[in-house]
Length: 480
Image 1 (cartoon, rainbow, N blue to C red):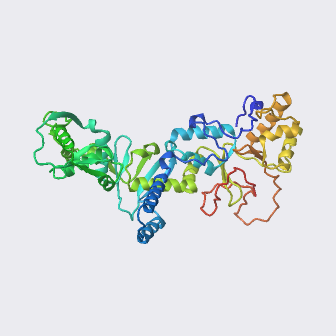
Image 2: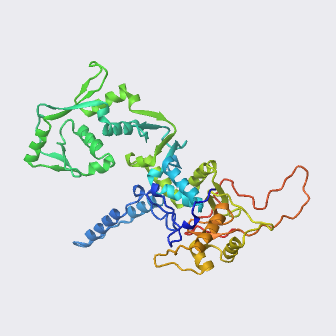
Image 3: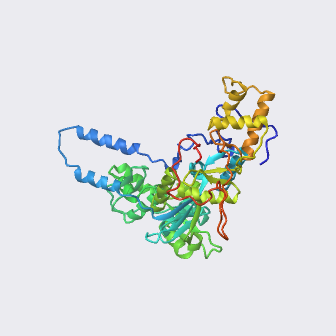
């Protein structure tokens, strides 16, 4: 690993541990780096709590009526206790551009980080990962319907078609507003969507159900249809009824964009246009596959359903203990020639761009470097910004900076040499560690055709669930 032109410029500030990942929105690897989670996956419980408070308040008003809430409460508790089973298999991998920026920063710093730290940093924001989906044999979803240039996966043709008509309607149809005769009949009320405030239709209108579905698909597809239906209210003001009648004199027509005029039929309703598109031009709407790869930044496009819930559930699980994702990332880091090792057979996995070197009984260093080695051995896991004060007697100013002197420059150059050569490990939080001197192996008689492995051979096998310890707040542990 090439050394910097001026090792003395190595930062000695109090906050020197975070990496400068400007390409990753200035995120750092500090001890609390993984406490946040993507806003797209934060569970909002405040609204449910407020509803519960409102219910309790309403029960306190008026005459006291004793109600038995146990059956509903017991049913809710049983539902909460039932573990969620994902409908599809979900695998997370790093997105190429952010991952290249991250690995470049790790390699340049020559610091050592926990594999779980790097994994959680990738999982922290949807734009940093891609997700791969596969069907589960025992579940209902056997294939995916991928729609749009983003290849958004859907579990049904209906969902894929609704997405395309909502996002890419102009790709298939030319719309126009035409004037038609007002609807005939006797209407004493008209239903209205309490969410959007739009007048839908009288309940006795013959196209009521179709208009209901069109409004839900166009404006409130993120809500289950049952919740949308519960928000429909009936109004009887004649003014509003007349307003709806006038509204119905304007109709949208949909003309298909065919190659010729004969191939470009016009439809009076979106439902008929949808049926034509599904039966005549299905290949233009979606592709059918049993394996999907799409970017996490497209998660908001997914409708609320089993696929989205499965991804959210697995994402939350991996953030708590990212074993599976760490193994996926580990293989890619290994191909990029990163050094990945464990501290002991059941230790935490670490990643570094520098290959470790171990001192033996014949190792020899200059007097200034040996002094640094002795200090680190006697003060295990000491922060790098404590070395100048301990060895040179200099103290930082109020901002945590040291005055640059030739002695300080030489000291930091020697520390940098030990780190970049692999003799000393500098962890992501700035702590320094040096492995003990390796003892010469005892001579043993070896059986024919059998070799012996070095005592300090790197542990570079796949992580096993029982072998990986949950990451601690700090990046440093003592090597066995």
